[in-house]
Length: 157
Image (cartoon, rainbow, N blue to C red; front, side, top):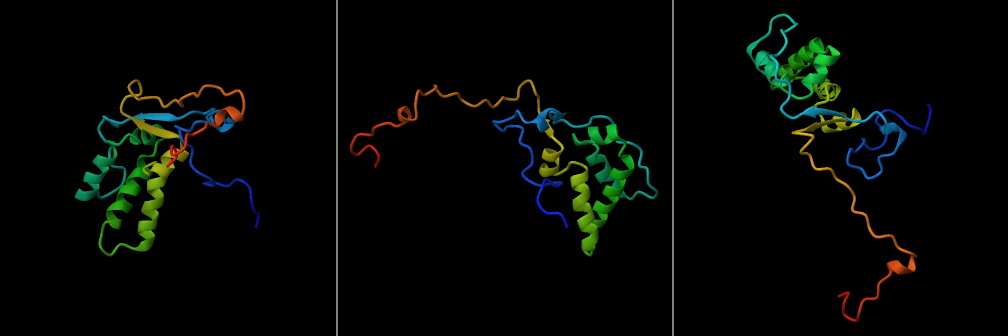
């Protein structure tokens, strides 16, 4: 078994607000989704025999911002399977395997903060209004000694 080295999901997820953003891995940039989500009607249910709860969950998930990506990537059937698994997982006696599958599908569909960060997806209300975080620049110092200041007696307590 190999040891060490980079692996899928090793290390922290990328942070869009990090101070050091000049890494080669940042060249791709971030996908920005509108907070109002997808406004078009939900696609037609692709599976057989949809129940009332599935219809309700189906409609609500297709209003999420991530639905724009699902539509672009052609994930209608996958989202339908997720909705069906989620409705089954809501039941009192749902299996642990079913709930584990739902948890994994949440990540696959960018519905967790961690999966969104790893896929470099951000949801913003209005990018033009979003405040940009820029680090405050300190005045350059001439030497390490100039960073030290003398505190009068009793000034530190």
